Image 1: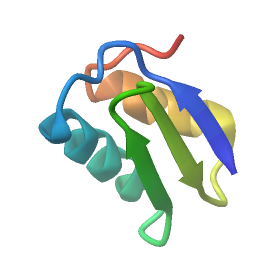
Image 2: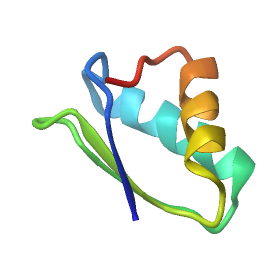
Image 3: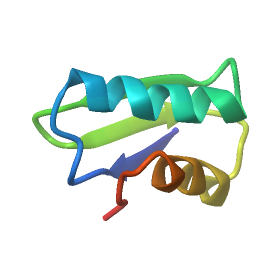
Image 4: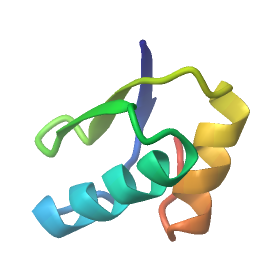
Length: 63
């Protein structure tokens, strides 16, 4: 399980965009966004670097 801090994730639409970006890498990934804590917990077989790159390409920064 990978937990990332995404400080500019502000709403459910942001969480949906991040989820879609991760699932483009791994269709079976489990993604849980916590808007209050601005974190995303991801269960995937992909590398941390690949997941971070996907989220960054979707327009979000990783803290």
